[in-house]
Length: 460
Image (cartoon, rainbow, N blue to C red; front, side, top):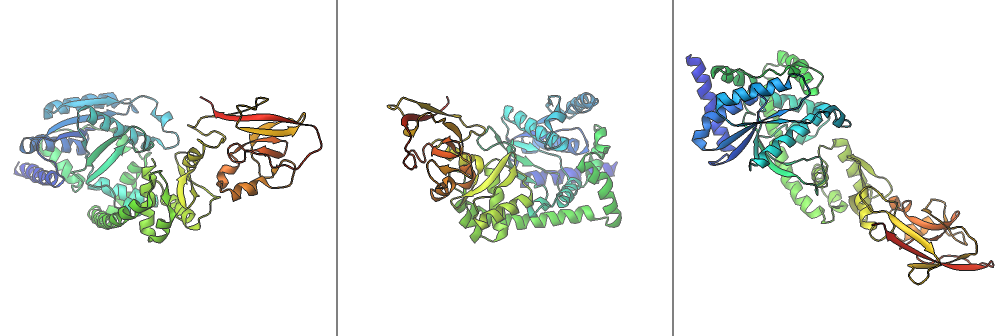
């Protein structure tokens, strides 16, 4: 009995000190992720004991992913635990069909995203911006190993942080609605054994989630297949991985300070990134600047090889290639800056008719005998059939052998936009590229001619 009380007292004192170190002050509203398992139960129980000391209010949030037949039963068990803890609980049942929504990112990642979104939404409704999660040192070891196997850099190998700011959802564009929250992991320094001993000492029984024993998901596979083998050889591996992650976090913080200064100089208001700053910076700093820029334009968790290819793109200053960065986005170099292809088109599209891309208006090009209200007037052979099409690589100007592509190059039109330009042509010869060359480049002809008007506008 004395041992049980010692377990409780030691755990709760460490927990209280950690919360103070993380800046949890009197009067705070805390949203707590609550699966009902050992970790979140220890988190909730510890908060219930400490709440009178720090005078904060807690809301437990259980997310029912509805992926298992027993999920509703687990939610009910969480309600019973919340009653015993004398803490309010909100159960959020996600929409069915997550498997379909997970295509392209995997079920494990889809569940993670929807869980975080549900927690942030519940927190916002409760006027809270602080979310507590029950991750502990075994989870940290699993995370570090998973990042290692995926080829992560220093930040990934630093694992999870006790405190971090997060934009949720982080997987949408920066202009889309989002919530800014602070994630706290006050149990990150506790072992799984210490947590289980605490829960048993206070006489509570956690919710059993049978999916935790499945090795279908990567984390469970690392938990059940990899870590036991590692611990058999190196019994203190959990603690040493934790120390390594902490050391890498300190190194990362130093590099991040240097990268912040470089990013402030390199980032532009038009969502582009100066390549000269990247070239002048040491590669570790340049990589961090690139990651921060990708996050700023709405991309997160980009693989290191993508960042490396972006760095290579920036240093080569070649405007012809592009790098796919995920989420349907591609990055190019334009005028000494990195930008997405969509942004490049957006900046040009208000002025120059292009083949429309997602989210941009369609262009209408009218050809008629109305010369008064036209944007340009063409003189063409009588009976000629005019086409509105994109510019093609082998095009020449009408009536001669002058290359259209060469003139576009001289005019500074980005290589990746040239074949998106709309043109008025007769077969393989171009008469007009609206807003760029509004007059004919043509040799004289001896055939009967007529004048037509061309007008271009955006479709409303």
